[in-house]
Image (cartoon, rainbow, N blue to C red; front, side, top):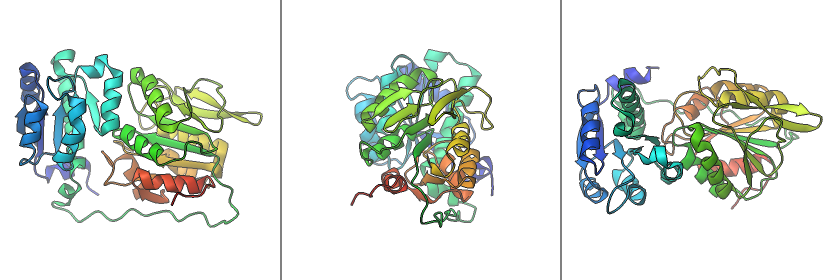
Length: 364
């Protein structure tokens, strides 16, 4: 299989729209993108209203969207832009990503794929340009799956792992969820389709900046209807309690008598992610074995694939989000193509598999 970089070289340029009321920001972003291989700015708008009008006739792959604009603000416009952009991925580029974690999470929950501070807030450093271009390219590849069909055979369907054949197998006793880019929106969709009380603990590793994690926990509390806490050392893992991996440590586990408790792990993970889904999954495979149900949602990279293999080897179950509903089909793709997933579905349908996996009755 070709690498993403090799596939990108065979594809048409990623078509980009910039929406920002600041002339300085629009100019800076345009200059950073101009001349970059495989990227093309096809639209610039100073407000959301003009952008929506342009999107009636222009097709784009990635939209750079400011949140703080006069008239229709970015948050208000975001759902309409997603609808009219017909599959484009939204990268929020706003100073509010620094000063307003709640605004950032609101944008991600509404369907933005990722966020980044404005260049004027960070200075014009080469590192910022590299980060910006990297995010645009990754989102551009994910925006329209048919782009990848150019110059290669269609990708085969993922190999699904058949359910464990033991009819007397005990239901899962813990639900572990991992996500990255696009995961906030996917988690909201998943919890919206789950009952308020699952009767099992839920543990979540979501790739987000540490400063945003407390706000993310608050959002998950609202979405799940359960007690939601940031994981701390020796914290007990209890039914109908959601634990969130802190931004500066992996969430692992140990037994203390009959109680499963949190063990914060700071060792480097193979994926390089902190916190890492691999670490969480591997620890649950060791402590919970076949009573573990893992879900891998939208995200860049391969974090989770190694840990998912450990869960499957221990007799547990892995579910993965499908490509069509993922902002970036990286992490779920890794487990799906490795044949580790028992189902590859959008979050709303994964919820039914979760309910069945913990011994509940799927909703009609």
